[in-house]
Structure formats: C-alpha cells, structure tokens
Amino acid sequence: MSSYYDALETRSVTQREAALMAALPGQVAHAQAHAPAFAGILEGISAQTVTSRAALAKLPVTRKHELLESQQAARQSGGDVFGGFSALTYGAGMPRVFASPGTIYEPDSTRQDYWRMARAIYAAGFRPGQLIHNSFSYHFVPAGAMMESGAHALGCTVFPGGTGQTEQQVQAMAELRPAGYIGTPSFLKIIVEKAAEMKIPLPTVTRALVSGEAFPPSLRDWLAERGIAGYQCYASADLGLIAYETEAREGLVLDEGVIVEIVRPGTGDPVPEGEVGELVVTTLNPDYPLIRFGTGDLSAILTGQCPTGRTNARIKGWMGRADQTVKVRGMFVHPGQVADIARRFPEVLKARLVVSGEMANDSMTFRVESASAIAGLDQRISDAIRDVTKLRGTVEMLAPGSLPNDGKVIEDARSYK
Image (cartoon, rainbow, N blue to C red; front, top):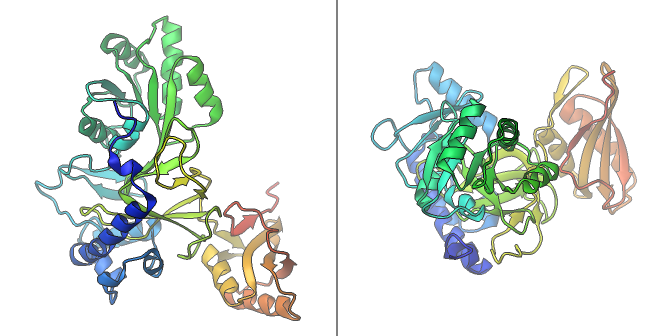
C-alpha cells in the first residue's frame, strides 16, 4: 500500500502554496459572513486582497484567551455560547458540543474526519480494515471523538477504551487483538506495565499514535523495546490536526488543511525561518473558521523536507508556552510590551527582557541585539521601557546573534527561595 495518505502530501511546494493562497480569501470571506466574531475582528478588511502570506500577516492574531473571553461575555448576556466563532448552530449539523479547560466550548460537525486526524493515524502505520484501541477521553473533551472520526475516515474499527480501568483495557486488548493504541503515551505505559504484571501478552499492539502530553525519546525507546512503534501528533480541539510525526522521526510534518505561521510572541509579526516563536494557525475548516489563531505554543520551522518524501514544511514540535507574562513590582509586563518597545527603534534586531533578583526586590534588564553602535540609543530605549511598562529598566546592548533562539521574549530569572 502507499506510504502516503493521499497525493496532497507529495505535491510540489509551489502547488501547495498556490492552493492554500487560492483558498485563503474565500475562507476569510466565509468567516466574516458566518462567524460573527470575525465579522468584528476583520471589519474593514477586503477578503479578496488576502491572497498571500504577507497579506495574511497584516490581519490581527486572535489568541485563545480572547476566544475564551468572548465566549464568557456572550454566555453572561445569554448570547452565543461559542462567542461568535462558530459558523454552525445547534441542530443536525452539530451532533455534539465539547468542553475544554477554561471552559471553552467547541462545536462538533457532521463533516467526515472533521478534525483531519486520519492523516496522522495513517502516518503512524494504521491501515484500513484494522481495529484501533482508542484510550482518549470520550466525555467533556473532544479527544476521543477526534481520533475516532479520523479512524473511521481511514476505514478502521474503533474500540472506545477511554481512560481508567487498566485491567479491563488489558483484557480488551488481549481478546480483541487491535493493531495498535491511540491515546496519551503515559497511559499506554501504564497499560503495558499492567499487562506484564498480569502476565498477559499483547502481541498485536505494535504501533501507537500518542498526543496530549510530552512524548520524550526515553519513553519512545521504552515502548520500542517492547515491540511498540510510537508516533506523536500535535492537535488541538479548536484547530484539529496541526502536524504529525513520520517514520523519519525528524520533526512534525504540517497538515495539509492549515496555514501555519511562526510569529514573535506578543505580536503578529512572522519570524525568519528557523527562529523559535508562537505557532499561529489559520484553518480552512468552514464550520469553525479560525483566522490567525494563536495557539500560545512555541515552535520553529525546520529547514528542508521530510526524508519520507512528504513535501510540506515541518516544525520542531512543542517547545514551550508563548505567554511569558510576568509581574514585576506589582505591575504585569507582557510580551507585547517588549515588542512595542523594540518596534520604536529600527536599530533593534531582537530584544529580550530579563527579570532578575528576588521577588519584591527585582530588576529588569532589556537585552538588545543591534548592528549599530549609536550614541544615546541605550538611554532612548531606557526611556521607552519606562513609558511602556511604567517601570525602570537597564539596557544591555549586544552584537547580532547573541540572544538564544528559544522563543523567549521575557525571561524570569528571579530567585524564588
């Protein structure tokens, strides 16, 4: 059988980019017309002009906390529980509603493979006609349904194992003989250990697609030693599949149904390829048309293409959180403020605010990369720090390339002893 889920995975980079950019203005127009929140967010924007990444980058980023705030405000007034972000309403087109921590409510859809998980499941080695043991939760959160809908689209049968009841999970695996497991990596380890304790072999469980938490190489190797090839994917309840791992084990390949940008935390400004920043995603899903949705997660684009022959871009995977807001001397300092300060000075190539000392006796150092040694620049930046943050900070001028490529805009280096 083919190594690829479909021909989209191996089309040329030029073909893919042309197709995504051709679909983009229609998706923007659809969001403006059918998702009231985006009618406001994108007010005054002509959708037909959004035909390039440069044009997309000019649109505002909507972050998860803003979506939550919109939902909460609408609920309090008896309005739309989805805060105006869903193009669907209750009824036949929305079979279920799910809840994520916050609480953020997400709509389900009757659309086949609504969260586009089949691609990741296929890349993990599952094939039509197989049974998959799905141990993601089936209540409140959509994780179980996300994976089940993808498995069905692939032509697989699913055992809805859900969470807990470890001994029963082992018994079901032993008797039903699934081709593999889908769920969190930590729960798979618990199941495998319980099977060993019960002296019950699980010879058919030879592959796994895991998500929802970190999947360190040590656990991947532990599973491999027991005959299970584990692959990970990166997805969210809002966006569905974003990226997935392949047998090359070199980063995560982007899904074909999303447009991904890496931006400087606290801004909507794309960073150069390879630089760590916040993952911002535009989905082509018409039912939940999120435009420039900030995930709050850090990642970076890898150079080159996947050795498996898939031609889409790859990301390094999850590299931390982008929201680095800190409280300094009773005042909140946000990544967006750091960006605001840096934007005032064309000479500034990159900036990082370092908060050091001890709580209640802390200090701020604004570390700046600049190729120009301009007299008085440090003092002007110092004045801008006070203007923007209402706090005093010292300025440290650095040569280009001095700051680490880790996506940090604010570094909290204080002692909490």
